Amino acid sequence: MTDNRSNHPLDPMEDQVLDRYLASLGRFSPGPGFGDRVMARVRVRAPVPARAPGIAQRLVRSRRWPVLAYSLSGAAAASSTALTAWVAANFQAMTAWASASLVAVAVPAWQAVLAWITTTSAAVGSALVTGALTVGLSPMIWSLAILTLAVPVSLIGFLLAVRPTHRMRPHVAR
Image (tube, rainbow, N blue to C red; front, side, top):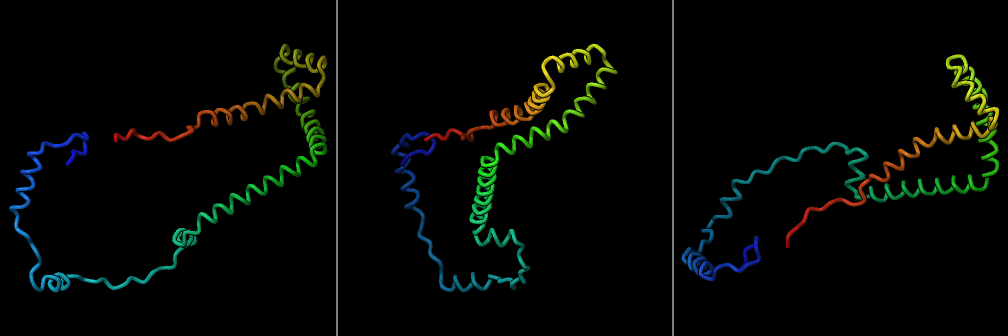
């Protein structure tokens, strides 16, 4: 006999004492009519009318919800694959459209920002205007767009980097 806490055998004397004590106890068996007396006390409740289960309850009860989850994830994967294929096939048209849209929207916005900056802060505004005239408007627009997108992309990267890769399990002694 071993102790569950330490894997060391117990004192053999303790085993003998326990065996003698258990042997000294009399044997018990139910008397006649015991089962009938117990069953006479059993009360069976009347069945409660079941209400109609909702969709979630039916899915969980039928154990088909993993199939539904796999189907939905497969549909999402298929649609994202189709979208990726379409973008790859139309990449040149997409970049031309994005550039034209960016210039169409960004140029008036950039001019409005420059006008506001030049009126509020002459030094900063003149530096930006000088930079825009020296470098050109398109590289500055692209730089601002990239800098604007850098913040959410870096946040997503940060969240992916700090996500735990595995769950910690408590140490289990064997």
